Length: 301
Image (tube, rainbow, N blue to C red; front, top):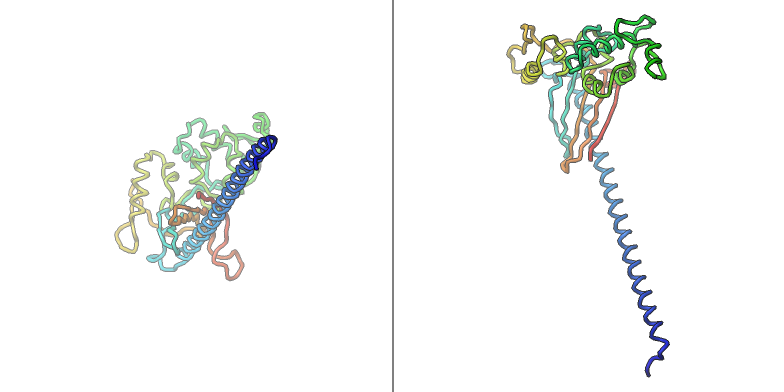
């Protein structure tokens, strides 16, 4: 029995509808597959991030343990040298710097600050202005240093705040001081602290940026001093490295307050880095191995 003539167009329409439905189902299935894949990647990202972060935290705790060892021949040296350890399947790189090797923003004199800025490549007149502005920021009076800045200068420059007239609470607060650009801050911040309480840094623990601030120092000589210091192992004996003037860099004293950088890398390349400052002991709280003064973490997965 043959189909009636008016049924042919209906069959054509039905065929098109079926094709559209198939296309829609294909799109829906593709979307579900993409969502499932994205959720799987997010879950993996979260897992790797958590795994690497706790491995990096284990590195911080291991560094604290090493710094608490009484025997100076066995204790790690907090002079910024790299120590590599394994924790489960993570490779951890640890660097420790005693805060006494850094320049304290709250007590360093203007000349030391000026030397730091010029060593970082800041022009002489700009460095002098910033050093004086730092002094005006942290002192409690309204007297303006020769090249400094007090409230009126900040107002004239369009700032909504004036000089603090108090000590720095964080190193990052330096960015509020007049004349300090993001580029200048990035150059000098690795050399700064607010925790040492010392007017001059201990060069046995000082990073490259601090050594470069010594008048007459060159980048090549500063790096040579760092390399010689990191190659020296007190457990093996031998004299410690010396400064160009013959002053030995003896890693002793210190503050018991350390900046610790712990970077944990997983076998798949994912990593997390913790940049912390800790003080040994629990600040009067019994049973604590250390007190956290600063804690910053970042990741790259």
